[in-house]
Structures are given as C-alpha cells and as structure tokens.
Image 1 (tube, rainbow, N blue to C red):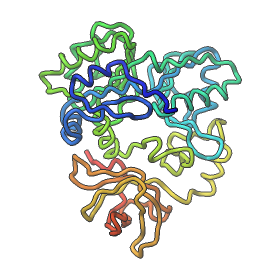
Image 2: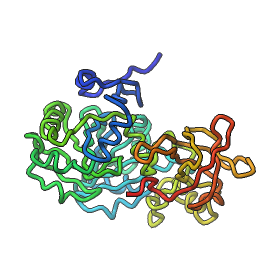
Image 3: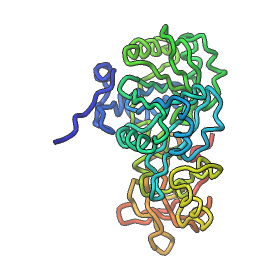
Amino acid sequence: MEDQIKEIQLNDLHIALGGKMVPFAGYNMPVRYSSDKEEHLCVRNGVGVFDVSHMGEFMVEGPEALNLIQKVTSNDASKLVEGQAQYSCFPNETGGIVDDLIVYKFSDEKYMLVVNASNIEKDWNWVNKYNTMGAQLTNISDDISLFAVQGPKAIEAVQALTPVNLSEVKFYHFTLGEFAGVKDVIISGTGYTGAGGFEIYVKNEDAEQVWKAIFEAGKDFDIKPIGLGARDTLRMEMGYCLYGNDIDDTTSPLEAGLGWITKFTKDFTNSEALLAQKEAGITRRLVGFIMQDRGIPRGHYKIVDAEGNEIGEVTSGTQSPSMNVGIGLGYVKKEFAKAGTEIFIQVRNKNLKAIVEKLPLLKS
C-alpha cells in the first residue's frame, strides 16, 4: 500500500493561490504558481516566499544534547554559540551520508536539528540509535511550519512585522522574537537560494496569520509565493547539494566537497574510515560545470572526456534562468575536477562541451 501523502498546514491556501501541487518527499507541495523562470528571477532580484513546512525538526535537549550531536554529525557543534546555526551532515557507517542538516543552538542544553523531509523517519531512527547517552529527543516536525523569505529585498519587505532588527541577524545566526504579532518565532538568517533572506519557523496554528502578514507587508515589493521548481534552480546556481541527487548513502562528504563540514578534531560516526579516505585521497569529486555547447544537462547523463571515455555522471542539471545557459553538478574522476577543465556531457547521444567551474556557478 502506498504511504499516505501528507499535507502541509497551508495546503488549501496554496491551491487557492494557484499553486500546482505535486507529491514531493511524501508531502503534497506547490511546485510552481506561475513559471519557474519568473519565480526564480523574482527571488534573485526582489523577494519571494517558499513554504517549506515539509522539512523536519528534532529538538535535542538535556545535559547530553551536545554529546549526542557531536557523535552523529560531522561538523564540530562545540564551536557554536547561542543563536548560531551550523551546516552539517550525518555520516553513515559505510562512508556515505544519511542526510545533511542544520544544527541550531539555543543554549548549552537545547538544540534543534533541521533535516530533509524525505529523510525524517530515517534520520529520527538514526539519531535515536546513537542516543546511548540519554539526551532528550522530540520530533516536532508535524507541529512546525517553515517559510523561507528569500531575495535581496527580504529585509525591507518584512522588517515592519518585527521589532527584531533583521539587518543584524547575521548569516547562519538566528533569534527568537515577535513576528507578525506572534511571540517566540524563530527568525533565522539561513536559506537555500544564495539570494539572502530569512527562514521563519512558526507553530502550525500561527502559520496562516504569519503567511498572510508577510504578503501584506511585502506587497509594495512585489512579493510572490515561490514553488519547489525555482528552489531547485536557485540552489543549483549556487552549487548547493540536494540530498538524493548530489549526496546520498553512497557519497562521502569528502567526495561531495563537504570536507569543510567534516571535522576530525572529534570522534563521530565512521570518522576513522573518513579520515583514512582523506589521507589516501579521494578518487572522484563533485564539481559544478557550465555548458559551452547548447544543451541542458540532466541527472544521470554520462560525463565523458574528449575521447569519449566515461569519467563520471551528472547529479543535477538545468537551464540557469539567471545566466541563460545549461549548468549542472556531477561527480568526475579527480583528475578532471580542477576549475577550467574541459568535460563533455552526453545529451541525446551527442557529447556537448562543458567547463568545470568553481562554485557558486552564478558569480554575484
């Protein structure tokens, strides 16, 4: 029997707004309201709002909270100060990644882990499996709505809704404050677009009030609801990994270019094997590339060298709405991973030229 598709709190509102709803990660989600390109450019140049309430949230509390987080995540959460967030991943026992996540520190004994919707159950089981120290774990995923207000005009558009000075909320920091008349809202300087802005965590019962207030406050800035289609093209321009495409249970964080969140100053799940891999050297690497020949790369297209020998595979690809050119991410043999290297993408039996580029692919 198929698993029941879940609905986010504002499901009916998105339908009323003309959102095209599709099943995604077990949830009925708005993929677009107008066109992907229009929504993409709205976020790059102005301000747009994503309802990403499908994401998962776990509270980790008590005197053993940090010990558990240090054990299951690759980054060093002991470096966090109160009000700071950290990108990290859960390494698995076989060299791959269970999921990528963000760790939020409220206090020495209170943290929140924000995980991908498709992995909520898997991640919950994983963290519990390693909780031999007795940290208090609560899965609040079904109680929380999450709105990403993204774009260069995000601060101006919603500043009137909160006494918090939004320009003082630094990147990857957060604060608790009143927002749209609701108390204790988490206002976080995070996002998945590279366009600036905030993520707003609210209880489900306050979701509609907050959503409507955001659109009322932002109407002079031409604020628009944005779907998952544009979320995908925005993150690809930045070279941000998507779990299930660019990273998964078979990709090592070192191969994925996530060495910067893999800290060997502490013991964590499978850290010995990953350290050995680091010392031996990886054989493949996730790279970003920009098409030189006309064509759109797609996931699972083969990557070949000038002679046509297979050297890797595309994991994500699209036509960049900002640059009007094909872009992508993919794994290639290490000797082809240097910026400036010529590679070829097999698109419909043709080998189309591309160049490996340093991330982000979209230069500001």
